[in-house]
Image 1: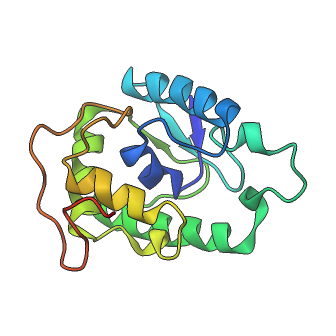
Image 2: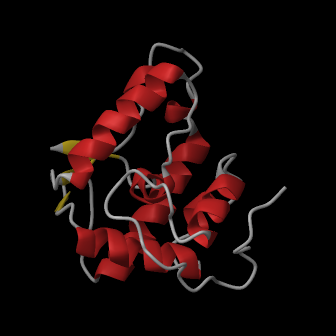
Length: 157
């Protein structure tokens, strides 16, 4: 089972192999393979399997209040999208239907409250705007999805 904090359910959609450090990227790539293979996701509170390589740093942002706020927003938005109650300990099937549904909502902007102010937001905008080409988690979409107003479908300079 892959342990993910709620906002990482959004981050995984646009992961293309970029990250905070080589160890972080290598770990995330392994997790992307597990998720793509259908390993279930368990929702956790606080640092998760993606955060693991960063936790030796006392100042890791994984413990910050702003990140916990992102988790709360993501959990609410994703629960609404999936039409089910989600909480710490909930298990979600990791399959193409989930990835398709999350990516569509992400592209439309309906699950993006957790992304406001994130340093990776413009990268995620570009990946979503390009139809998730190169995304390493799940099957990538073959055609660019609809995009919400205010979210550029063009790569930013």
